[in-house]
Length: 79
Image 1 (cartoon, helix red, strand yellow):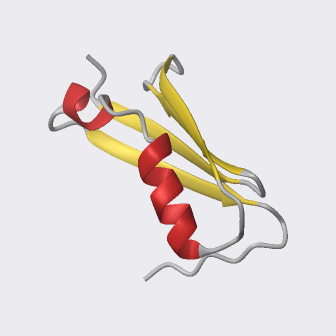
Image 2 (image 1 turned 60 degrees about the vertical axis):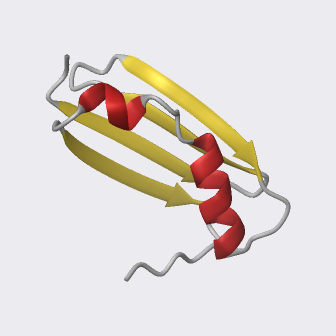
C-alpha cells in the first residue's frame, strides 16, 4: 500500500475529472461527472460524484497531496 496518494482534480467546462495516483505514478482510480454551468455549488456536487468511492478507505492514514486546475477563464476562491 502506498503511503501517499496524489489526487488530481480538473474542473473543466463540461465535467469534473479526478485521478488518484500512488507515489510511484501508478493510476489507482479515476472518475468524472458532468457539469452544465460554471457554478461552485455544482462543482462541489460533481466533485463528490467524480471522486472514486474507495479511495479514502483504501488508504487509511496515508498522506494525501491534492492539485486542482480549471479552465483558463475560471476562478476558484479557496478559504
